[in-house]
Length: 331
Length: 166
Image 1 (cartoon, helix red, strand yellow):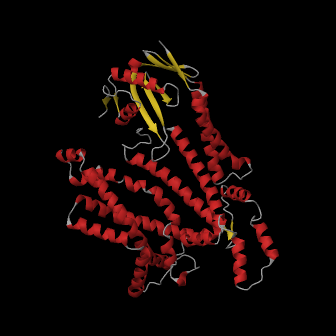
Image 2 (spheres, chains in turn orange, brown; image 1 turned 45 degrees about the vertical axis):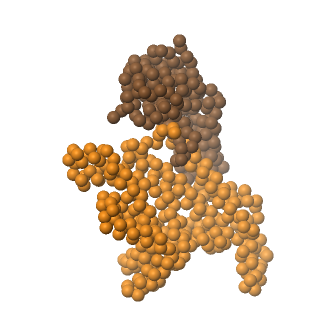
Image 3 (tube, rainbow over the protein chains, first blue to last red; image 1 turned 120 degrees about the vertical axis):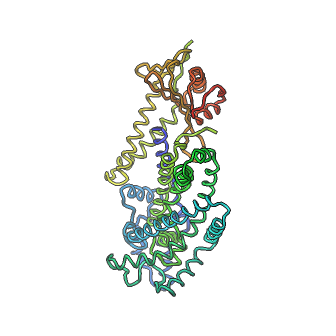
């Protein structure tokens, strides 16, 4: 087991190292760099470009150095918690991410909780009441959620929220609370504004989860141990919760590896449409403007969460399901 | 007749390489003068893990397995002997660091006479060791898990006499 952990950690480290290098190179693949775009923008506005300022910026951000030296300097800072300086915002990356990171965490955790809270009871009901009206109806609603484009649902719900509840359009708090310290009123405004994005982004995630939970639970419910438990007189509720449901939870746990990176980078399109102050639009802008330190830090963090998420979900699966171990069968 | 097995350098070179690469990657920031905080601390802990892994690989390199009709003996510094008639547990596990299966490795774990022995599949003659251990376990009427039985079958060893654990 020790060997497994060590090899797994080495795989994670090498993956992150390769991803960080790839991310850094890919961001720089388009012709030019941030300063080239900056000069073009100034020229298009008819403003004069100060060569001294450009030379200073090049030196300041190390853009005059070879790419491998820029990478080593950046990754060296990253391991010490210094993610570099955003060229576009002229601020440390951690300051740029600051509040949007908190909003992203709040929004995406709310979405994950929403998905689990909706998908779990519906999935269990659909499986235990297979082919009933309720099963067909809930499945139909789930498919509608999956099939409706998020941006369309976002526009409709924003309109309805504005018309019937007077909720301001866009953002995660009312404009009057922006840049103000947190208090109860701002918190309530956050909760009010969370409803639409959580429903919009959450509905697309619930359908898949419902289908998987339903399929897994049905699979378990038809196994012989369930028949045996029933024959021995175990109450239906206890039987369901204690055995098949526990086994059917595996896809929920296995999904952690995919969910963790989404907490940071998920739902970019909806965030842009709804003008949400989350990390998605910041990543998009950073990539478009070739702000390599900002974009690179985001993408590296997403990769870190992916590999750590996979590792954690494997460990949790082994704990949850006694049949699953970190060892297996050679096929 | 006693047959001797051991891990050659070629058998273990990948493990040595892993330990070396792991230690180098994890120590690099510290060596180049990074402050001991944040990820640097985590990397230092990982470096210790890789160093222990390297040490274990060295110990395996030194290990000699001796097999005869009556017992299996592992010698590193001292002899660790499990007589086959005292064998109380046999498990054969398969590990892979990739979810999709990929290239993994097997580990044979034997218990008996108050001792535990772990033998990894990169030792030369691994299949012969497993074959003889399984034969002894079957003779002793030991039960084995379904994954152990499937792994034994994957080595083309007859599993018809093995009792599966309930």
